[in-house]
Length: 252
Image 1: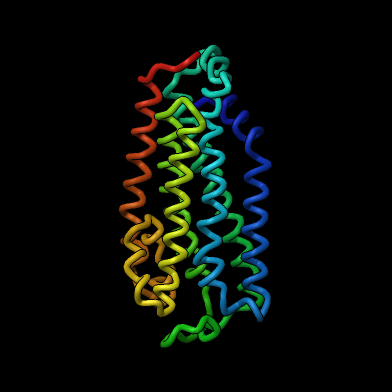
Image 2: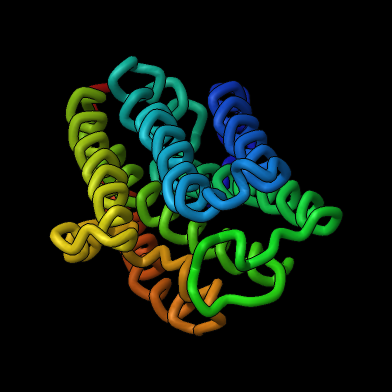
């Protein structure tokens, strides 16, 4: 089911994009965590926006390259001619997407933990009423797990489009609309949380609403419960995309 040569080829083809997105996200995290003037915006701007925008760009571009882009360019014919079965292609590319996204968040999380251990941010700095003490390593891990799982659901849906369609224009069009709507509506809903009442209900129109860093800050368990649906979406989308890719006609 798993093809190591194909996995290595995926790394070679996508490491630049992954490195850029991971580097930018990590540097922004360090900046927002370390600089006193940006610390109050750590959760509203960085965790509220950047942890979905940057991975969203990565999964949009990469998911297309992993399957649909290769079918579109004709290189999938070469891959399948090397005795790699279609189910192995779908499984391997899904493993690459999940593992690369996990590593991206892992590096950013580690950077934040290191910065926070030397210069803990006071919860009062964040501007939330009723919070006391400092941001802890546990909070950082929980927030990033929540963001990762939601971004994984975005990636899974994009991978499903890539497996279903043979043309990049359809994959990028639909995946771009899905990711763009999810991120844009989440940004607008953020203003609802900041006091714009008319935008509060927008959070229900995006998958990003399951990413709940505020529950982590207030010590609630809602953040973990909210991840059940994104996990289900991820499993179903990856499975559905793989099934369609296995059975559909390919222009080889």
